[in-house]
Image 1 (cartoon, rainbow, N blue to C red):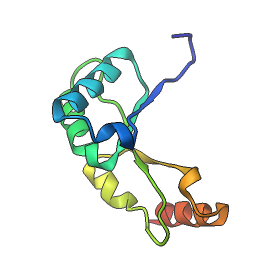
Image 2 (cartoon, rainbow, N blue to C red; image 1 turned 180 degrees about the horizontal axis):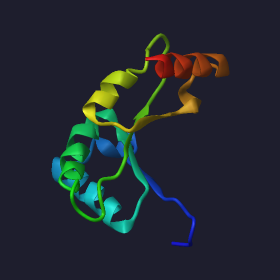
Image 3 (cartoon, one colour; image 1 turned 120 degrees about the vertical axis):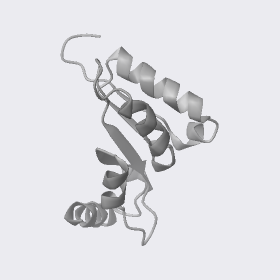
Image 4 (cartoon, rainbow, N blue to C red; image 1 turned 135 degrees about the vertical axis):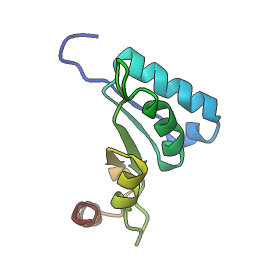
Length: 114
């Protein structure tokens, strides 16, 4: 890849339903070995990816940051602390799913205050 280019790999919800635990571990390992900067995945796959990434703690390349993709449903709060406790380095919010730009801003602000 060209110098200075950051590659982040995303596993979408539609694909995640067809993946087995071995698939997730394989994708996680391949992304790490290929030099990806992070892996974005649904929270449902976080434990599987953490299992693989934890095995890379004292290896080269080391573990990837795992970022949980979250949707915004009316009245639903993002559980940032829970995701962090499970091992997520952060969240990716789908702005298209927000009912409005104001709701998006309020949800992100609420998550940041946790």
